[in-house]
Length: 259
Image (cartoon, rainbow, N blue to C red; front, side, top):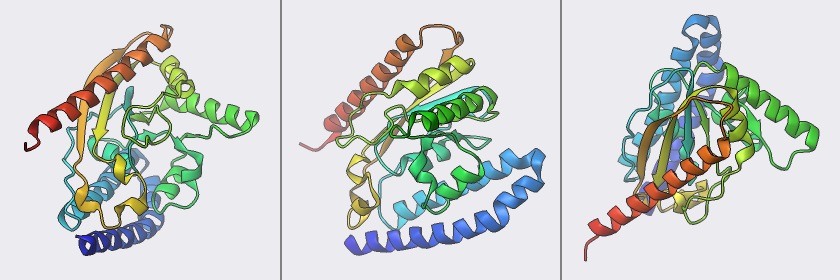
């Protein structure tokens, strides 16, 4: 199995390297030229990348990664997901129908990761960095406000802000989410993943891809129709929903385990 994991990782590295070149040279320039079809072109490309990645992990690496239930694309859709692994971003992309999602991501991811970093910079994804100086942080939040108000596709946020080491739902970092909720009305979808937290980083995949037994629940839509309402109550409700769903999923896995 270790050999299959190494082969799978090698194929993923090759695929992402070639994909990065194609994205820079062909896909993004074509999307700029076809301005009316830009969202459709980028959406199909991102889903192709995500689905091919998971196909390699399933077929070559023998990972148990289920195909997710679809989340509708379009303006006013907010997707909130717990954060367990580097697979979370391609997982949420593979879940969205129609237009490509705009993902609120950490600033350091815009620097060196093939395909992902170029996407963040080219599409001007809103970035966050809790360690940034006050002036820089203010600019990040102002950009997030604008994106939340004007985005014509789904907006994705991982409200925990970072991966959890035990896969449980961590504390929410609420500043960005509060600003997003104040920006407009939303139809909120909650994605709860499990089974990926032991493979949170790339190094964890070496020799262990076959150990992945993933799960993804899609809950919603939950209507947020009053941007002036108390967002704290709504955020607490979302977190409670995530916690309850994760407990349910883990309980169901235990019930199905052989005695």
